[in-house]
Image (cartoon, rainbow, N blue to C red; front, side, top):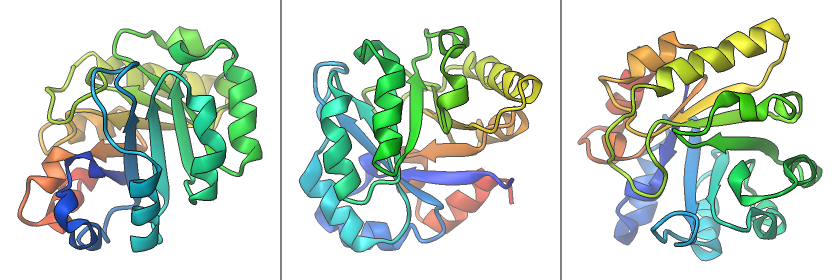
Length: 214
């Protein structure tokens, strides 16, 4: 499959959000970073902004829950039309149950891996996942530097899905730009999440095309 680009609105200018979303028409997915100030040392946004974004675009919405209680957001985000829902396994005791709840609400279910969290922690749950979100920065802030060890993690995930005949997608978030995207595509990442690289550019379409390697 072709590489998909998820534009993270964390770096958007919220004072002119409609214009910002309109400039993202070449993006495949709109990425939403939801932070609670507990699991990560930052706050972002909640339901009102998600609802606003849903009203501005028909593109799929991908919610990354950097919160201590992701289970509390399943119903609300599904009602708002979110299509993808990922959480950090460190925040819940029963990942399998949560994944089934996400799917029961009609959303794709994913688990996010922090840079220091090894792939083998997913061994017993991979077959239930629609995607794995590999963090290539420590979650909580935009515009951080890429952590190179993420490449090996992506390659390991790709090796596992091939050897076990699985079809989960590999999503990567953090420090994704023109310099890092070629190696990520080569490692077989399916979805690249980018925030500051896209929103910090003058031509969003050109930046997205560059990330796709086109």
